[in-house]
Length: 147
Image (cartoon, helix red, strand yellow):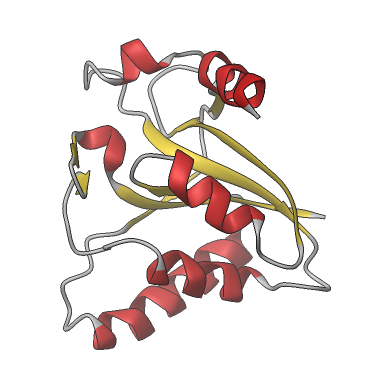
């Protein structure tokens, strides 16, 4: 089992899309890249925590590769808009790949280079070492309660 952590705007829509991919075993919404190891939606929305809204994926690399996950990532959001996706604006909605090891970093750099050709060099997606991941417990539970 491997993990991918991806920021691509509001986490709800992408979480559903990723959960339907063969090889994705589990999805979880949360926040990553911020200044502390604990936060919540209200704090993140202030723009002072530096967290991005993210989807964390547990996936089986025998079924789906990290590379294929990243290609899908670039299909389901606009990586050319800085700190926004659709109607959502703020640093928490940025496009960002949070890598967990050197291999993920190298694959991320390769895929961005390839995708930048398709997007005419306008990709603003950041690549960062994953730090201070926090599950969005308060919202995840509300969502599960509605199912």
